[in-house]
Length: 243
Length: 243
Image 1 (cartoon, each protein chain N blue to C red):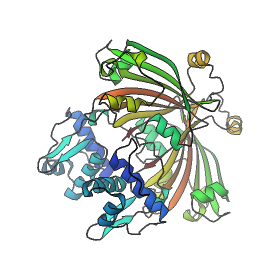
Image 2 (image 1 turned 135 degrees about the vertical axis):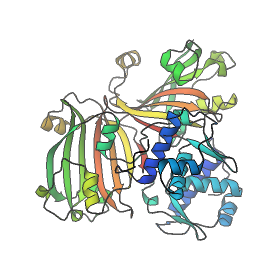
Image 3 (image 1 turned 180 degrees about the vertical axis):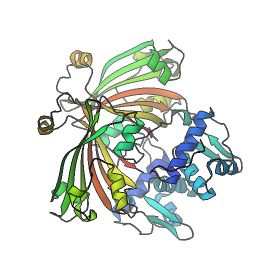
Image 4 (image 1 turned 45 degrees about the horizontal axis):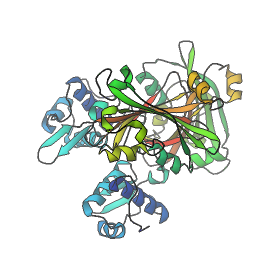
C-alpha cells in the first residue's frame, strides 16, 4: 500500500484510486468516517493540496460526502461504486490490463495521409491536413479482442513514422512529444465490425462490438488523438454511475 | 428561456442544463467569463445555494473553471461537452425524447415472481423475495428501438399489478410511492438480443444492441429498480467525458 505512486496516470487520479481501495480494504461502510487529512497525507506521502484534489474527485463521484466541521464520510453510494468507470481516461493498454487481459498488440497498418472531413473536424485541423493513421489489433491468446484505429496530427510527430515502434503505448509516445492526452470526449454505441475490416483482417466471429469513438485532448485542450476502438462485446463491459 | 423549471429532473440538474444552454446560445468560448451569480439567480429565478450547486456540477464536468477572486470561466473542454452524457440519470422515456424519438410503449408481460439469484443480489433482497417483472418494447413508428426488462421489489407496490397502467413512466410510478430513483450504478456492453426474445417477440433484424444493466437507488441509497435495457445499436449512441 505504501509503494511509491509512479504509473502513468496523474498523481491525483492515482491517489483517488488508492483512497477508494483503502475504503474497500478497511471495510468502511456508509456513514463511516474517513481518516483525517493529516493521517492520509502521512499514509500516502503526498502534499495536502494533492490530497484535497483527490478527495474532491471522490466527492464528485459520490464515494464520500463532506459534513462541514465534522469531516468526510463514506456515502451510501460507495458500495456500488464501480472499479473502472467508463469515465476514467486511460490507455487501451491500461484498460485491457484492468480487465485481466495481457494482449499482444499487432500493427496492421501505419500511414501518413490527408485527413478526411470527419477526422479533420475531430482534430480541429484544416481540411486535408496530414494525419498519421494507425490501425492495430489486440489479441488475447489467439482471440482478437480489440480492433483500433488512431488518428494523430502529423505535425505532432517530428520523426519518420517507420522509426517508431507503433506496437507500444500511444500515450507514452505522445508524452515524449509533450502532448500527453489528459481527457477525452467520447461516444459509445453497439455495432458490427465493418464488412471490409472483417474480410481484410480475417475477423469473422468477432460478433457485436462496443464502439468507442474518442477525441483526446492535451492539458491545453488541444485535440491530439482521434481514437476509434471496437471492443469485442464478449470480452468488455464498462461501468458507470448515473445521477 | 425564462419559463419555469418544472420537469421531473431535480432543480439543480435542470439548472445545470440551462446554464450549459446559455453558454451555447450566447456563443461563450474557452476563457470567456460567465455571468455573475447575481445575474444568474435573477435570470433563472432561483436561490443562490441552488445556483452554486448547479455551478459545482458544471465545474465537475469541466464545462467551467473557477479562478478564485476573479470568477467563473468557460473551460477549453466546454466546446466538446456532450449534450446527454451517459452519466445523466433519466428515464428511458426522457432518454428517447432527447434523441428525438416519440416511441410507443408496448407492455409485453407483467408478472409477480420470486427473484432469481442475480435479481435478489442487485435489489439487495433475500433470495426468493417477490419482485415485479415488467417486460416492454418501445416502437418508433414501426421500428422496435428498445427492449426493456425492469425488476421492482414487490413490497414497493402496494396495489394489484393489473390496477396499474404499466405503459407509463416507471419513475413517475415509483415517485407516487415515494421511491423515486435518484441515481444508478450501471454497466454497458454490446450484445445481440437473446434468441428466445427474438423469437417470442418477432425481433429479427434488431441487430447489435447496446445493453445497459442498471441498479437504480432512491434518495436513501436503497435499490428500487433493476433495469435491463437493450438499445438498438442503429438508433442510440451515448456520449461521455473521460478524465
